[in-house]
View (tube, rainbow, N blue to C red):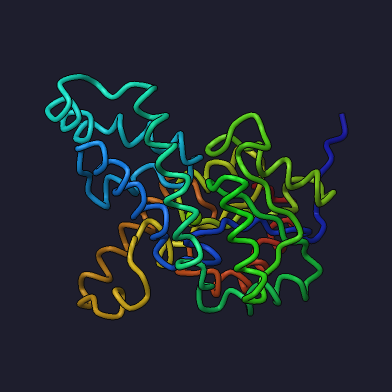
Length: 273
Ligand SMILES: [Mg+2]
């Protein structure tokens, strides 16, 4: 039986939002997760808040509550386990708090506009996926557009059967952009669920180690880090993204354009993700 092999060019890029194109260090969701747990009398650390990053925000809250250290603190503070009703209360708190501060974290990551221009110059369509809800994305899309970034498609978890790590947001982007096959698309993101959604959608995946949740620091914090700390944290971020299955890991979106030639050469030789 003849096997079809796609050897053509790349056709589209799917970009994550926070930590990938904007919000260096992926701070906006992390600070709000900390606040909603604090309101329940169960303080959490920034690391605990960041653990499940990339998931839909209600799924993320439930995952934080299941983290063993947080679950133990919840029982100690409240005398019982965190329930689905508690998750509902925290998500209800989360939404307005997140909406209120999103615009404060909407600056584009350095090199984003230049990278997107390079993608467009190669004829690529630009799609996007996110753990934010539709109402949150309305704010971020407006803020991004004011700063010169406007993808061709944006898909949120509520628009598909389930968000990350399942692949549906990626597949929905492909449909809206009318791009196929999936091996002609590259998924870029800063979290482990970003990589998983891309892999399960049959796409090439590129992890961003420095500007997102894995480092969890903004540009000025990174600039103040002692070089040995920076090196250690970066190595850990690279390792975690590669261990999750990323085809490539680079520091930031600015490093992605040259990689596309490498991926196209692999496609031309009959390789696939
Ligand atoms: Mg992100």
